[in-house]
Length: 101
Image (cartoon, rainbow, N blue to C red; front, side, top):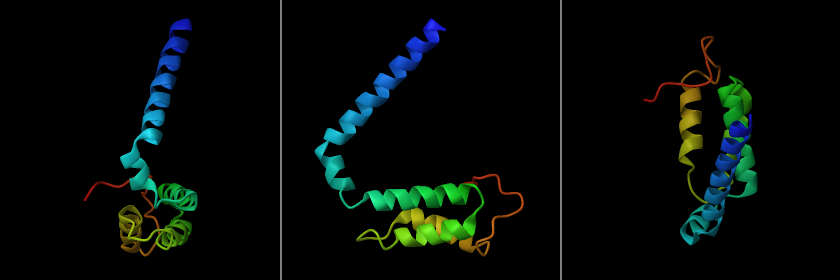
């Protein structure tokens, strides 16, 4: 038990160091400056609905993300295009993920 807690603490510190590095790296800060909290919230909710097979809701949320950035969002577009191929209805065999094209 003690060893498991030690390992969890090491992993937690490693993740925190990574997060600290990402928040301080100027290039990353500039790169992410167009991505608002609203975008991340909408995209994350859209992706969760996509993976759960709620494609009508995912469609609405991922379509919303398209107006939140000053450029085309590739991941949102890719998910929307894939779902459109199924008329925005998840296949009955949907497991939450798809094979890469």
